[in-house]
Amino acid sequence: MSPMNESPLRFPFLPTLVVLVLFLQLGGCASSHQKKDPTDPVQQVKLGNRYYEGKSVPKDNETAVLWYRKAALQGNANGQFYLGRCYSRGDGVPKNDIEAAQWYRKAAEQDCTEAQYRLGLCYDRNEGVPQDNVNAYKWLNIAASSGDQDARTVRNAVACRITEAQVTQAQKLSREWEPK
Image (tube, rainbow, N blue to C red; front, side, top):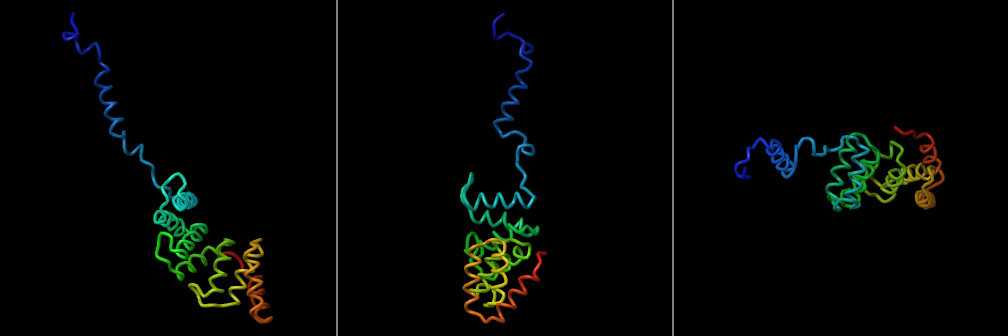
């Protein structure tokens, strides 16, 4: 019997194989192969950091901001801090000191040391909040008490510019402060 006269029943798997090859070439089942966006704020911050730093993905500050914002809106202190940093620097969003200070405050109130330091700087430098030496000292002192050396240095510089009564008031506010 010549190959032209062979019965298709001798190769019953051929139609299935053709369908499988086409399926794989077209990308397979979209619903099972597409990654879903993470909803966990910790994972969202990690993904934002990857885009911000350009690690294993192209550097893209606007996409980083998108992920930081998702985490920040869920109350994640790291997402709030990084979003504040983006507003402070103008990374992926227009520079906006008021927005930066607001996000730093949310993170600082949750005991994020870096946000406490940055919020103290905002008060010291009149960036996004009115210049206020007592609040600058307070936030810098809180960050310094967590071991932040930069906060300690700036706090000491602020102390040199204010009265003893203001230092006492700021220290009292620092001691009374509790994370939310």
